[in-house]
Image 1 (cartoon, rainbow, N blue to C red):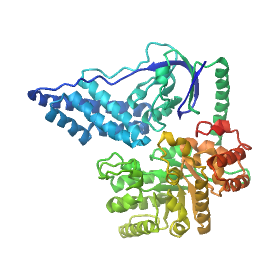
Image 2: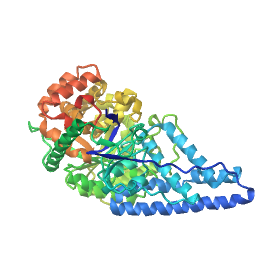
Image 3: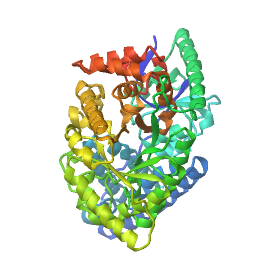
Image 4: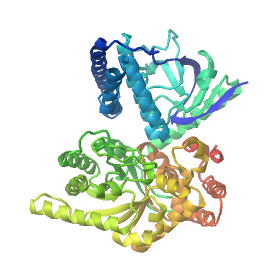
Length: 593
């Protein structure tokens, strides 16, 4: 009888083949005390291992840049920062000097303290850093033990295998030979972990968060791995294998159709025009988004400029980054979000307070208004970028009219300085806000006269409205954009935008969900922004569903009182126009399977 495990889909694709269980572990570190006269030598040994680790990480980063590209290579930046982290380094040295511990034991204890502190957060973006920390720990401990970097050659098997592991660090993943691997299945991990990002870059199907799979599978066991649905089948029957092969053919045909859609217009069958834009994190992603058919950028996250930095970015560096994206879309809108700091994003140059719940604390517009020098520098760079395209400035986590008015005042002051200095900018720039909290949604009609546009961030809106942490796996079934409260809040925002004559777009993950697009079209929202990989699928939905039909279904959904009822109604309506099984796995909805 076959064994079935469901995890998180991390990289699409269906593969069938033998398992190879990769078992790796950190070296055992005995508790050793050293004599007082050996303390200085242990400190030197620790620093030598750090210096070597830094050089090795830089080598791997350069190899990754050459093999996969500069964006993928940036995932090693956190490790470089960890190697030189003052708290990590000074804490280790302190344990050596004050407790006379060996360098290896002192370093291991300091790492354990970090792991304990980070694990308490439970948030995926913080938990993802644990893999980087393990990478650093493995490298430095091996160096101090006189051991070489591990060799991940997958044994001597000549055939391609499905790699099964407890977890993978970025270094392990990037050193794997993709020619020998069909897919990857791990007990731990998230879709945003660096190893999952690398798997997607290597075009390897992957499923993560499979709990105890590596303990149940033996090397050589036949497996099916479905990276779209997040399912792994160990010991599949011939009937199961044939079913997956047929579905794989169907999905590949579907994907080929999506490629052909890239440069067709985003318009519904009843001729409702839709603005379909891209969400990006790095300037280099703009060209890829354009190639995938994006009509501009609906969310350009600017935190890459500050997170992990020891000093704030200069105005010129910011200006060049913003200008690059503006010039990639010279005739289309580019919405650039000001720094959304706090929560899970901690710049080293900002002394973030210790908070019981950072996602309800000092973050978003609160941080930037409290750090006017940093904010003014970004606003100047953004204003200068408006000279190169339709650049629109977007404020995160707005709750009050005062926050918009204060920002407008700062913009006017910086614009006056640029004008007096003879520096070009577009005086007709647009300033808008993200609707991410119930407060903002409920006073949307009051905010609208002061904003040039709204952008609904459904990820946080769902989290804050339902009091459900979107990073808590245990609560995942409760985190849904199809809760009646969410549907009604978005409906109210859409109505407020129409009444004020301003655009209302959606840049959260609901816009990348087929049911979400169907719902939003039915609410009269015709501007979406999604991840680059989702653009073709969402365009397919838009081009398949008449907006008038969506409105009729959503009118019914607005009267319903439970998330299940809303989901069932939307699914029934959308299924008249699309084969929903092709979307399975992108969101964990049993109704779509």
